[in-house]
Image (cartoon, rainbow over all chains, first blue to last red; front, side):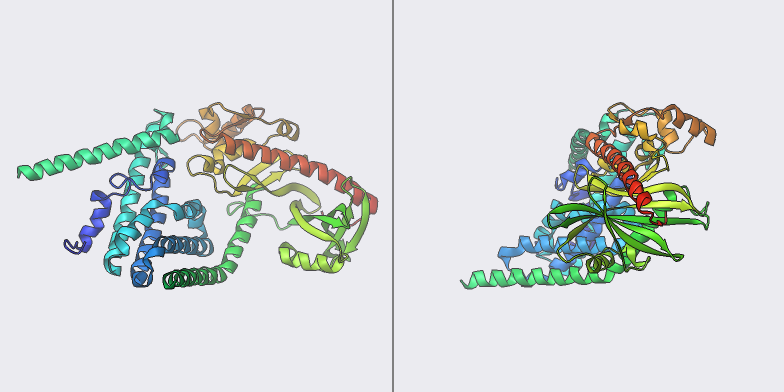
Length: 206
Length: 304
């Protein structure tokens, strides 16, 4: 890791494109398949993940020297669960309007693979600063992935975007059902892989 | 051995830290959270009756809450109703115990302020001092009667039933003849995009206006929701810009006799809500009739 140290902006964009949690790392597929039925769902879940990821990453990287290596996974889970609870309670108490929309999403997060994975591969080996940017990048990357999926599925399934009627009819109701989530994720992964191939080929040609 | 000890101590400390953090956040937020919930319930109650910011409730509107308890008096199961009553012009509560068949057993005065009655623990202390020590009691449910002056305009029933994942909490509003005025989903943890759609107007408003006799036999059908009905349920009228109440009402009227259209991909949640609503309405109408009979026989000056 130390051999090729990345700058903060590289860490930030790393999460969005090169190591996009959904399309490149293929992590947290359950929410990606289950919840990306509309753009709004994608945004809300994405923002919730972003906050939990950033807080957990910073916490773990701050206390990484005190964690016994054998119990790091329980500690990660504990940290994530604590942050989820804290955010959930804070939202409920001080921003009831946001809680009304976000409440169900925040509670889902404890079991997300992407957060544990970033803590394991990044936060526990790096200082707080880079961990913060990695967390922001990953959170935004997840949001981007969810919104992209939500856009395709909502448009094709319901004919709407963000609840506004765009097409005026429903092309394929199938797309809002869970099974179509797999198709969408698979197709998006293919697009990302193809983009990478083209990109690498062009770079070689230069 | 040393390794194990270090692991144990490490885990214990991290759990303790987490517990302290969560505990202190809970302590800080608990009051505000309760307050928010209280405000939300109040708003929902008024909203179900058609009052809001644009249409403020009249001053003579008031709510009277009946709390129902289940008692165990040395092995005999009894129902306990905490009734709001008028005594010398003041509103207090009286506790009436009846058998499950609706026969009167006894009534006891309760020492509790009307404002404190909405708090569960406060009611419990009042009940403990009023009841015999050996009696075991547990809270069952509450029903709210909305009154305008002396006329009952609605019954508001907070209700809870199992959904697809965990319990779904709703507030059901019935009119004086037990027809549905409205349904509001208070709390649920169904899947976003699927079961969570129960909170959408196009589902919950399907219950609006269903007469009691129709409600009792209501089923869930797995048919696509007709587009014009969906627009009516969402309060939008057909055609661009042409929003007329009559159109919406006419469409609602047209589908009045229809069953509940299930949400695509969430039949279980749709069924759970429908069954829960039917159950709540049926049980409430039965209990209220039994209760009123006893109240009339005992000549209790109830505040509803």
